[in-house]
Amino acid sequence: MEEKDEAITARVKAHFAKDAHLKKSDIDVQTNAGVVSLTGEVRDIMTSANASWTAWQVAGVKSVKNDLTVKEKS
Image (cartoon, rainbow, N blue to C red; front, top):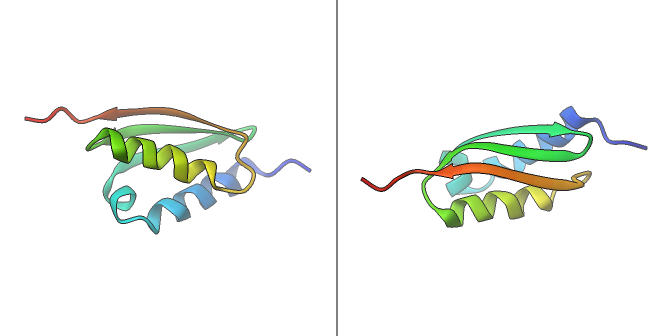
């Protein structure tokens, strides 16, 4: 049975909320047929990688498309 995309999105957001760095980041999560798309801006590449890894751990996720941008250091 296919997971409902809204349920997957909610679980990914819940996982992000448990992580101090991800919780502070401006990440938008969308799911389409089990493919999670991450968009928004993060402070560094490690946060971006952590977001992808965290999303992968969520039940029902078939793949993760990371379109996060890293803020330029001023």
